[in-house]
Image (cartoon, rainbow, N blue to C red; front, side, top):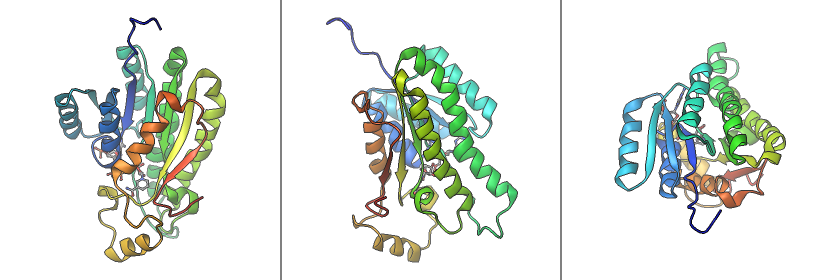
Length: 251
Ligand code: NAP
């Protein structure tokens, strides 16, 4: 780059950006100068967040899409890459839970969680890989969970999907590492969001007892890790799982 050229604005897609962890990641990446494409199913909170980012001088666009619909999700990524002529960062964050003990878990509860939490990451990576390869740069982050590392009763579907993200990420890291593309996992522990709002106080107290850092996590704790992993300087970090869990698992 010559002395007069400015660095290009990196384009980042963040799924599940309408609330919780995804919203914190989107705000953080926007603050750091990325153009953030906000993805979730419901348009209204995405439009609100886009306005919030723009009001503080950042760049964002809102894209309402169900990532569980593979065709629509892949088409949305292609549309972003065409529009911006680049795609630099993909954060596969959106996730759902359909908890049940394995004896009671329905095929639908299993399939929905695998589809939204795992298959969507594969579909997203496959669609994002080509534009990233064209740009000779890419940062892919899959948001897993400590449930995927150590298991969690009542979450056979969720833990299986999250655990599979580790194998997926390591494989993508190996396949695309030579093209300037990294792929890592950030695995949150217990983070206070809508997803965990209904946990009984008794369980929250038990969790607290398992933590080295004596507080529950907040979405910004995860955003800070994603910020580093998606930065230009994290070029030598790939195929890794970073557990941001207050020292709960240390695995
Ligand atoms: P959350 O508050 O429930 O938010 C989930 C987000 O995903 C929302 O923006 C939701 O928006 C979006 N989403 C859900 N299904 C979607 C679909 N089919 N298509 C597009 N967007 C969809 O969850 P969170 O707590 O922030 O969790 C974010 C990620 O961290 C998830 O992958 C979760 O598994 C993981 N995690 C969370 C914790 C925790 O303690 N909170 C711990 C470990 C891992 P719409 O409903 O509008 O689509």
